[in-house]
Amino acid sequence: MRVLETERLILRWLQTSDAAFILELVNEPSWLKYIGDKGVKTLKDAENYIRKGPIEMYERLGFGLYLVEIKESNESIGICGLIKREALEDVDLGFAFLPKFWGKRYAFESASATMSYGKNALGLPRIAAITSQGNRPSEKLLEKLGFRFERNVRLSTNDDELKLYVAI
Picture 1 (cartoon, one colour):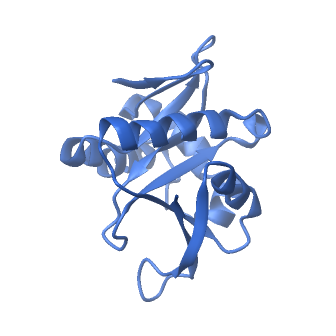
Picture 2 (cartoon, helix red, strand yellow):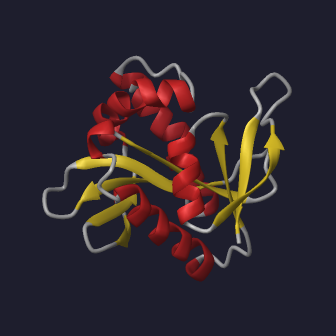
């Protein structure tokens, strides 16, 4: 289902047919470094990741992570959306793009549209975001979007400390 459209991009619900793209994305060195190994090593794993993550969240909350495609070519370039994690009070903005699409303002364009959607269509009073320590590119994007660092958090006791940002 198409959720958002910008000048250059389409954001739509992920489907199990997007498994090959997800398999590529979650095994990128940048994903592994800043987001972590999700144990997605096969197409079947990727299908399960989509079912148990984004699809389950769409069914439960009506939102989640969306596939980001270039409008002209329908090429999948990344994911961007809103996530509700049990460990966080607020819904948070998440995004990840294949490195060959970095520096083209796609992350800013899709994240801006997602933020507007969250506030205007979903009525979210506050949107957060988390980054790994040292993920300066994501921090810079969040700052451009109007987020400000609030505090360090852990999603669970054994997890690494993350930086929590909140949209002002």
